[in-house]
Length: 449
Image (tube, rainbow, N blue to C red; front, top):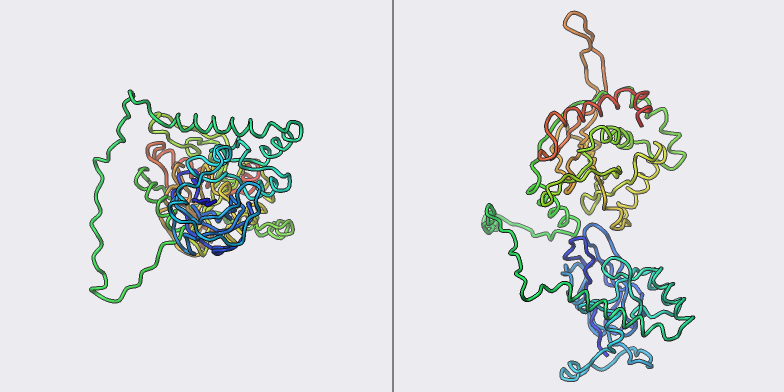
């Protein structure tokens, strides 16, 4: 029979993905769980397993295609129940193909709105090892995703009661029908109209630039498209305000140099970013409204009592912001090791979606490349971001008008962009002042972290 494999909805507001690599061709025999595609979606590279065992009948995508959720990726020719899959099969006439029906039990448990069973490759391999048909396993994960625990539980029930599987399939069918029914509004219930955009400005079409000289078109890759959407959202929704100050990190830099080799022996790099991350948590604890998100619809501020710091990383594919969790619970050495490993995985394209979610505050440090000042954009739905410019050795006047000296100090420019709906300029000034005082004195720094 013919099976259609479409791009499932991964959730989290993702609507499209880019095909990075196609690992099978028309006519190839494929087993369920075998990796057939590599895609990039919202900054994460994902291996896509086959949901079927059979033969690839037709490929609908090629490398570098951008496909929408629900688009057909490929079709399979699968064996009828009790038959072995064939290498190739003659195409069915159109009229016969329309009459092909799947067994009701499999459709109920395996698909919702035509999508294959949502399960990770590791879960699929476990199901194969235990001899469990994923199509009969009800998923307990988000969106009905089948987890490894679901497979093990189902395998245990199947051993004790052979009649369990059909019952589970019927239960899954009922739940799927209830879910579909729940999404439909009653006929007598008025559907509220979507809010309008009274201030929306329609963009005019671009001119033909080739009229004035040669041009070359370059398609935006997945990471750049995702970043463009995120920045447009942040800039449109958040009233940004910038507060700038300068930290004297002379003593801190000497401290960093003294302990860098010790941290390196544990596999980490004691960078300025690591030190700033821990200092930022100190400031966030004193000013919790910078570690928050605004809920405009609910008219409330969500204050987060955890400290997951995002760190902007420059990669060949574009800017990616992985998240380091529970920074307040890690020692300086532990944090250096975690950040070093995370940055390396980001640059190798080996991060998953969990590594890119859940941040409460972001730090970006283009100063390692250069620049004396810049304006960072807040990573929505956060309410603030800290930018670090290039450190410079500068002459600094110490003392007062009657008694002063000029000394060389290592200075770090700080740029705090914040959401003015949540914090005011005075709040930002106090936040940066606390951060500067923490960075200025290593002894105070160690006491506060």
